[in-house]
Structures are given as structure tokens and as C-alpha cells.
Image 1 (cartoon, rainbow over the protein chains, first blue to last red):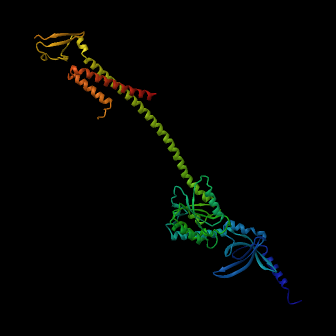
Image 2: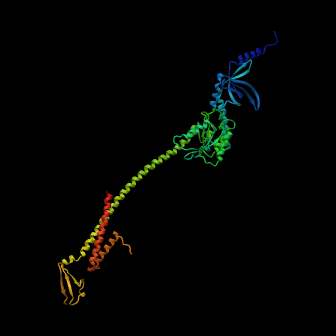
Image 3: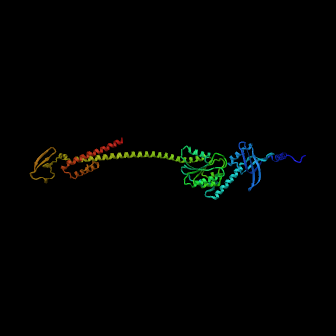
Length: 398
Length: 63
């Protein structure tokens, strides 16, 4: 018997022992992932699992996600909104595998989403608590709900001038613009764009800077829209950041979001005036708001029409009444005046001498002139005496 | 040259009232009576014409 064995025999024994002791079970392991290499076409991924104490690595193991379990990466990203990426602490379910050629590997079977979501939620709570402590007048809690001063912004009657924070060329920006430009009520919107990256390490800083820029600009906006959509369904961390949350609550305009995550409500959503699930719905919220004003205008138009008709009818009636009164008054007046003229005529007829002569009186004339008094005649004067039927001449004798 | 005074119903009425008052008070002598009566008759005719025109407008309006 030789005093050695082959390496493969030794490792084969180790593999047998490991399979016997550990091969029947799966283990839930908390570890940080690093050195990730994902082969999307072949559908497997290699990575390293670490445990740290401070900055020191105290445990390290290679790990693999085989084709059978490859879909857990997408499932995890979709459920949590977190990209499967370096330095992420995950709760993993693993099997122990040992290959005589490649050594020990932990095969990852599943990723505990609830652990990550819980951790994210805890981080989010920490940010919100910090914001409340630092800016109690801008962020507070009421009835177990986070409230911000942005919730209390008074919306203009019509919102048309909008500051848009979005990634240039992104599907989210395109969807938002399409909804605004094709609104069925033909409402015109004026947009000023503030481009940002919405993913990655610099996203929070860029969004925060653009919010500050909007605050500083001389332009007056009706609202600010922050949208994100399309591309990967992961990495919403910027929208849970202290920087962006502070930017929202310090914004002088109502903030509307369309960040596009179905399960996760970000800090930005919580503190914004209005949170929609998608950029399209975010844009639609503006049109929906403006519809109220259009409704008011249409109602006013109808009311004015109805009232105007009523007023015209009233004026017509009043005019007709006035006309009738006027005609009656005029007719009465004419009758009165006619009576007056007839009276004048009668009186003038009475003044004519014909009637008087018929009653036996006579007119005396001297040289063609009427003689009204006896003193106007002297002895010997010749006079004419007019009777009703003719004239006689006479001489004054006494 | 003086501008011809335009006939108005109100001025005619006033003149007729004056004529009647003069006759009543005996201020109009027999010699003046004829011309006065002629003036009054013309005023009455013109006044009646004015009233007839007004009545015509009323009838047209009512129609």
C-alpha cells in the first residue's frame, strides 16, 4: 500500500463526506454579494458571498446560480425594485455543492425578497425620520401617515407650465410627452426640461441639483413633474434618497411623480403632491385637473346663455308693457288735446256777432268803424245800423 | 333776416289759451275779432293735423 492517495481520491472523499453531511439540506444564509458575473445567454451567474465585520472579510465563498434557478434574479429585481448588483446584502437559500475540479460552491436556489424589502423599508423609514428631525416644518407625521408641505400646495386653477425632470431619450419621458401632447381636450402645455440620470450612483445628486435649479430659476411654473419609466425595472434608490426627498419638500411648486414601480412607494412619491404609478398617468393627472376648469367654463357658458335668454325675454316683456302704456298715454293725451281744441272752437264761435244780431241786437258803425259807446256820436252824425238781415242808415238827432 | 318760427303744438296751444282769455276779458274789439278768429282757426287746424299725425303713428305701431 502506497503512503499517498491521488488528489481526486481525496477530493472525492471530501465531496462524499460533504454530500453525506450537507447534501440533504438547504441553508438560509445572510451574505453580501460581490464579483458578480452574469451570463444572460447561457443563463447562469457566478458570484462571491462575503461576510464582513467592519471592513474585514471574515468569511468568503464562491457561489453560482444555475440555469434552473436563473429566473430568481429577475424575480428579485421585479419584486424589490433593487438591481441584483455588487455589495448587496441578501438572505439566500443555498445548497452546498462540491466539485473535485472546481471546489466548494454554494448554489443559490432562491433570494428572500421580503428580507430585502424589509431592509429597504427600514432604510426608507430612517431617511424619513431624519427629514422630519431636520425639517419639522416641511415633513411631519399625522394619523400614521407622512405629510409634507408639498401636499398643502395650492394648485393653480389651470396647470400648463411644467418643469419636467426626466432622463433624456427615456421611455418615461417619451410616454409623458405623448400623453401631454395628445390630450383629448387639446390643452396646450409649456414644458421646460431638466435632464437627469434616474439610475446609478449619481442619480440622486442630479435630481437634487435640478430641483434646486428649478427653485432658483426666475421662471414661474405651475408644477414640477418627476418621471421615470422604461429601461430596467430596478434601482429606485435615488427616489428613496434624503437629497431628493429634501428637494421635493423644499420645492415651491406642487410635485407630481410618475416613477413607475408597482409595489414600492418611494420617499419621493410619499412627499410629493401627487404620485402616479407611470409617467403616462402622471401627465394625465394634469389634464384631469385642467378638466375641472374646462367643466367650470362650460357650465358658466351654459349659465350665461340661459340667463341671457331670460334677460332678453324679460326686457322684451318690459318693452312691450312700456309700449302699451306709452300708446295708451299718447292716445289719452291726443283725446284731451282734441277736446281742448273743440272747446276753443266752440268758444270762438260764440264770440262771433251773428248769434247776437239774431237775438235782436244791432251793430252801429260810423264811417265804417264800430261804435261801442254813445259818447262816440254827436248831433247830426250819420251812422249805419247792421241788423241780422241787413243795414239801414240813420242820423243822430239828439 | 329773421328765421321763420317753427310751428309747435305747445306754442299753438299757448296762443289759443291767450286768445280765449282776451276774448273772455273783452280785450278783443270787434275790429280785431275777425283776424283773431282767423288766426285761432289756423292754429286749430294745424294743431289737429299734428294730433292726426301722432294718431297715425300709434295705429301703425299697434299694427
